[in-house]
Structures are given as structure tokens and as C-alpha cells.
Amino acid sequence: MSRREAAVSAAVVFVIAVVVRWYAASLVVFPRPEDTAYYVDVARNLLGGRGLVSDALWSYQTPPLVVPRPAFEVWLPLPTFAAALPMAVFGATFAAAQVSSVVIGALVPVLAWRLAADVAEERQLPPGRARTLAIGTGVTAAVSLPLILHSTLPDSTMPFAALTLAAVLLVNRVRASIGRDGAARGSMAGLVALGLVLGLAALTRNEAVWLGLAWAALAIGLPVAGRERLLAVAIPAVVALMAFAPWLVRDQLAFGSPLPGQTLSNALSIDGTDIFAWQDPPTLSRYLAIGLPQLLALRVTGFGHNLFDVLLLPGAPLSFIGLAGLPWATRIRSLQPLALVAVVTFLVTALVFPVSTTWGTFLHAAGAIHVLLILSALLALDALIVAVGRRRGWYRPVAWLAPTLTASGAVLFSAILLPSFGNASLLTLRRFVDLDLRLDGIGLTADASGPLITDTPIWLPYTHGGTALALPYESPTSVLDLAHRFHARAVVSLAGDHPFRAAIATGGDPAASCFQDVTPPATSALGGEDADVLRVYRVSCP
Image (cartoon, rainbow, N blue to C red; front, side):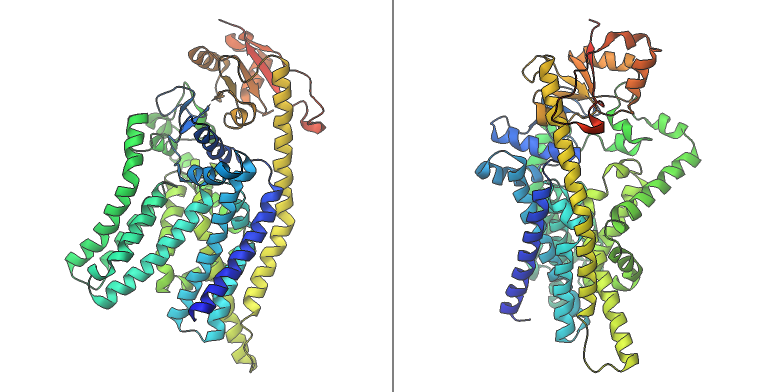
């Protein structure tokens, strides 16, 4: 492929990806899920001169327990920095923040195109099939539902996918260069670039550690002397550490530890709601007490969630073909780094964090793995078409059939499912417009003293202002203790099935009488069957 053809191909893929993502972003008017609002809200605070501060105390596992509080005790700041750039230009709105996710998300299909071109070159495909594989992979990734969906949300998913693919491309080039020259010094620029990408990935998601370990594992097999292997691992590691070190210092100053403070608690969770625990946090003894059968069941659930809910169903039917062809695709040297990272990330999240992964851990790290499945599916379909052509004596190549099928299927699923996600975001926006009006009507305004306890601890301050605390899935006595600790004014619940509401209704807990139902009437902003879901309980006991 000439440079001109490569540039034109990449530009075509990028333009298609941008147009599709821009349209999809126009349908999504509110940050769903809730963690997306966290990145945007911190970006607003940053641009407002408050620094990296969050108004939501959504988990109690990392001190200091104050609100407002330093942001990113678990998550990482690069998505917020990326969102803050367009917000500084176009205004501190969700739509402005989406500019970053649309652009970064559109880079992922371009990187997928480049990876497919490397695969075609390694397999020495004829020019027509090589061109079709590369462009077909890029275009399919441009219209793939899971990749489009997360490109509308300014969170960590697409930045991490782009950095993972960039790291894989650099690994392939560094491996080839070192193998050809027999020394790591000749690949200094590539090793430094790899280290920088790894450092940026570490500022995006904690799963970046698997990228670094994957490179270290692959470097062991390089056909060079031991000293050169050590340099090949050490140079990227030092550069990555230099890029990440300022954040380690910041975390040490803000939280008393340079490492994510909630990692162990997440690993010891036995239910997703443990993340909101106040008086009953995850512990090792509590974890082991549920017994081996239940511990195994948690891992079966986590495995099934990662496989079906994250990888296969959102990308169907293409993802099923890609999974079937994966054992053959991973024999290709260019795909081995990505396959290694995919397997490790999948297994660690399913086996070590089986509960947390059902709440999004693997989901947000799986962008590049969707690309792997797309490329694997196209390779499988290409091989099938070639085999059929030979058997039936076709005299003209029809390699274009594979990307036509994959892109058409992806477009169909995206066109059907994206509007429903957009409608859900609009409904959520209307719910919080209604909530804002109703809370102001009973004096729970953003400028009133004291935080609110709520089962939407990130969304509430994002839309209403003020500060919020996560509502534990615990007894009214525990919630009252939380209210006294932070001088909270009221409990605001939008989840009709929250056990706190049932406990207040039954009155079995002695602290239930300390929560007075002051739910205001619905406004016309919401309407429909959700109008009466809200419950507001004022804390009446001193």
C-alpha cells in the first residue's frame, strides 16, 4: 500500500466513523451510565477553578471521607482531561464533552484498519484481499454498535481502546525491529513511544498493567541477548513510570496511598451493592463465609457476563463468528499481543473481580477486544469465501463479500438499538429535570447546607448541584448514622426496589421513625409511569 493510498484509506475510515458517531451522540443527551457523569462533572469543576474535585461520595472504602472530595480515588483522570478540552472551547456541557469521545472513538476504527493492514501484510495476502481486509475492518469498526455506543460517552472506554490498539501496533513494530537488528538500542524511538502510550493508558484505566505485562512476556521471547531483552522491557517501563509518576504523587497526597484504595474491597465484594456499604464493608471473613459453592457461582456469573453481555450480544452476530475464528486468528503474530491482553483482562475481571465486573469493570476495558473479534470474523469469512471459490471454480475474487456482510450486519443492529439508548438517556434527563424542580419546591436546594443521601449519588449533584452521599443497602439505623456523620439533610431515592424504602414502610427498624416522608408532587416535566417513583425522606432525628 502506497503512502497516498494509506492516507486516503485512513481518512475515509475516519470520516465515516466521525459522521456515524456524531449522529449517535446527538441521540444521547444525558450521561448514562452514572459513572460517565462523574468524568464530566469533575471536568466542569476543573474548568470552574475548583480543581480535580468531586461533589459525590459514592463509596466509603477510600479515606478521607469528606465531601466535596478529591476525585478519582478509583478511576483515572485522562478521560476528564480529554473532555475538558472541548468544554473549555464550547462550554461546560455534556454535548461539548462528547466532542472528545466522538473524536477519540473515531480513531479506534482507523487503528483497527492499520492493525488489519499489518495482518494482511504478514499473511502476504494478494493486494485486493489485503486492501479489502484492512478497509473492511476499519469500516465495520466504524459502524459497530458497541464501539459507536461508547463513543457517545466521555468516559474511559474509548480512550483505553485507542491506547490499547496503539500499544499493540507499537509492540508489533518494535518486535519486528529488534528481531531484524538483533538489538534493542536501534528501536529506541519505538520503545520510548511504547512507554509513553503505556503511561497514558495507565492514566485511563488500571487494566493498563496488563498491557505492560504483555509486552514484558513477549519481550522474553525476542531472539536477542539477555541484556537487550532487559533494555526492551526497562525503557518502556521507565518512560511509562515517568508519565504516571505525577499521578502517583497526587494520589499519595490526596488519599494517603499511590495505589487505588478500593481494589481489595472490590475483589472481596459478594454483591454489587457492596460498593455503597457504610457499616458492613467487604471483608475477607465475610467473603469466605458465603462458602465455596457461592464463590464459584460468582465466578460463573462474572464469566458469563463478560462473555455474553459484554462481548457477544452487543456485537452479534459478527462477534459469534469472531469468537469461533479466534483460535486461528491468534496464530498470526500481529494479533498475539492483543489476544494476550484480551485473555488476561477477561480472566482477571471474571475470576478476581467477579462481582465488580457485572457493574462495568470489563465492559469499559473491552473496546480493543471488540476490534479483535471484528478482525477475527473478517479473517474467518475471507478464508471461507476463498475456500468456496476454489471449490466452485470462481474465476473472479469476491473478497468484498466479507466486509459487506459484516458492515451491513453492524449497521442493522446499530440502527435498531441506538435510538432506544438515546430514548433512555432522554427519559433519564427528564427524570432529573423533574427531580430538580421538586427538590427546590421543598427547600432542598443546591445552596442549602448539608449533603443529600441518594441512590443516584453521582447524577444528583451533576444535575441538581450541591453534594451527595451514596445510600447504603443497609438498615435505617445505618443510614441514620451516615446522616449524622455528614450532617445530611434528607434521603432522596429514585429506585423503587431499594430496601431502605421497604424498611421505612414496614417500620420494623427503630430508626425508621427518624425519616419523615416529604415527597413533593410530580411536575409536568416527567409524567408517565415514573412520575411517582421518587421518595424524599427528611432526617428528623438530631
